[in-house]
Image 1 (spheres, rainbow, N blue to C red):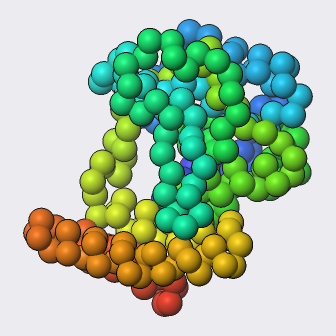
Image 2: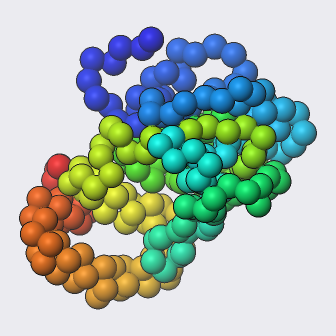
Length: 237
């Protein structure tokens, strides 16, 4: 156990563990998950099968709805909206995603990465604190020529957002802030400018009106704080 003395966020907290861990592989996993037999063995086997693998992730099912897929890989982030979706999300698992395949991003809830990849690429980006950090790290790893794989032979159950809450102001703040930060760091300038236009003329009015009509004023405040962070970085949740 590594005691940091403070809440460092997902990235820095895991980085503290990586710095002290031994072995050739790191398995970064959320505390609201449940392992199944063969989980780690399947991930390790993938690295033997695919020498170009920079990260590997298991199949995710919902803990409270076993047999329902949460994640079987990601689709690429839309460079104009800053959004992406999970493959298989909400589907009954009937073996339709039982083949190993590449995915553009790892799932932060459970991802295995070799030590040599971390040494070459660097640790997880800590400026995100919470949300989008694994997508950014995945981008960095792929830029080094590695691939990220989904391993269906490994299964993990996920309770999902048990730490932050599925719809908390904290989540709204960091998802807003980091969606913009991720795009700023990972797309071409012209794509980022189109994204900003989309965000200003669609996302901001839509979310502002939605939170007001729903009476979710704490979320409204968190949303605007996430926006203002990019102008006044001292703005915190």
